[in-house]
Amino acid sequence: MNKNQIEQTKSLLENPKKIAIIPHRNPDGDAMGSTLALYHFLKQQNHDVFVMAPNDFPSNLAFLPASEQVLIYENDKESNLKKLEEAELLFTLDFNALHRTGEMGQVLEKLSAPFIMIDHHEAPSDYATVTYSDTSFGSTCEMIYNFILFLDAKDKINLDVATCLYTGITTDSGSYRFPKTTPATHRIVAELLEKGVKNYEVHNLLFDNNSYNSLQLLGRALQNMKIIPELKTSYITLSQKELDEFNYVKGDTEGIVNYGLSLKGIIFTAIFIENKEENIIKISFRSQGDFDVNQFARNNFNGGGHINAAGGKSYENMTNTINKFIKIINTIPQLKN
Ligand code: 5GP
Ligand code: MN
Image 1 (cartoon, protein in one colour):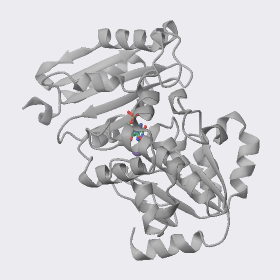
Image 2: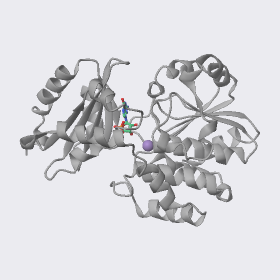
Image 3: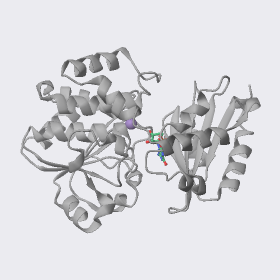
Image 4: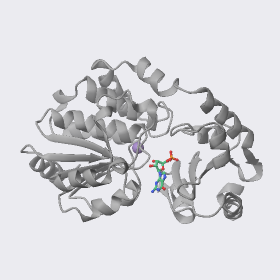
């Protein structure tokens, strides 16, 4: 944040306010961790704060302190709309454009209260009074830590704030292995541990929380994996029928896409997951090195994200979507050499 942005933020937070904090749709560890960390931080400054997610979060994030206070927009649109209209300041965290909140975006667009955006995705839209956007960060949680420092309020990082930040930094860095994990990331994490974060418990709650069904679904996904060695590409499909067969619940497909990249010689992978209710195929893309999946998702599949991790969607059926995908990757010279 530059000096001007810091001053503007300080003045917006000078007096106690009604504040809404909003993550993206299908919130992940970083989205929930950053919004709840900011919630615990602002609460200490006597603001009247709430977190409102567009839709529900995965059950393995329910351990985050105050997760039970999170409002779910789509569960009660009428009263949640009213709450949003009453907000005097809105934070949007871990996303770059209002449509990333789904239909809630149309409500947010109409609000006249000021917005503060804190985010690490490419191509931020221009809706906020203060836009703290920086794609060099591996997580929004790491930015929230810096945000608190910019406000000279490091002493307000208590155990609740620290646990939420630790969670988002851990999940968005793939447990400290993705390239944006820096010495600064580890220094921040060291400080969070000094606040008392039980790192082993957080990892256990996040990652050793699988159901039998979700592991069986993973097994099916791995069996469905296809490899195109000459394009250094792999992909996985999961149909709605397969999801139903294993009693899919939100979160069950989290992380499956990464198996496609763990194959020797593969630099680009995708997972295609059918969603009959929304009538779309939801797609996740991952890459290694300089193959830019943000650009790929943006150009071809109505999406976006980061250079090595992005998402998108297709409105065609699975067969047509896969045919389109294969056709496109065959035209990309970068995958051939
Ligand atoms: P995931 O594949 O885990 O859902 O998402 C990977 C990254 O891409 C995340 O940072 C996520 O926010 C972003 N992303 C996922 N889907 C979309 C999408 O439809 N549009 C945009 N702009 N970003 C997405
Ligand atoms: Mn993130």
